[in-house]
Image (cartoon, rainbow, N blue to C red; front, side):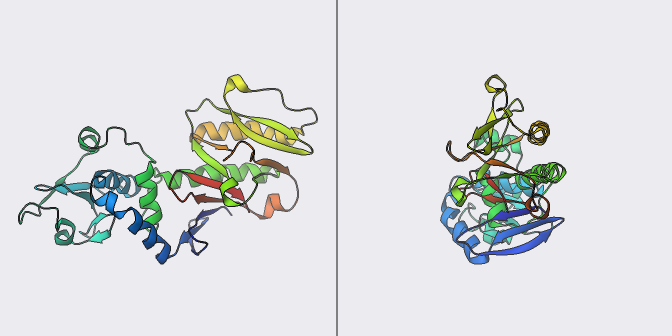
Length: 273
């Protein structure tokens, strides 16, 4: 079973989502993170956060007709921003001009045109929103669910070939899941008796080291195809922390991958546990 993990201060509470075990930060850690970023997403970047919530949930974005604040409108009538679900009056307080708390639709094109021209899916605001509010309904197109789908596909390969990707520890040396333009590939290095995995451009590919087992070669070929399909690649967090390709053993059939969101919402880390 693949386990999706988000960790803060080593306190977490597991919940089950479909076939994936999601280890989410507890209420204290979520609130600590939320409070640390609240000011920025209330004063200046509320439109980016609204876009992040919209990409997670699909709920319509709204803004004040007379005022400068944005959020998303939930099916129950509450309006969400970095503070969570709010009644309309609370949402509008301190931001509306006069007594006008009327909400009007906000389009993504307006967000791009007037506020954040470089805003992209899977950006920092979306990752913070997902971490602070993990129980929100996540669309399959959301960054978190796309990462889970990718690692589910990688786990199927690991079980098929009895090969898993293992990275050095502690957490900062976990491998990183990064977005891809689709033309990258992987190459295999050998260090002593270990086979290491590294992301590479097509021009950087070299023949595999002598003695590389055919099982590892087939695993990496299929891993490249899966990575290009999902537009995600697994890479080393640091040049000297390349993940290993580990072949055989019970750990290749009885365990699974854990992905953890980095503390600064820069992306997801991955490890076989």
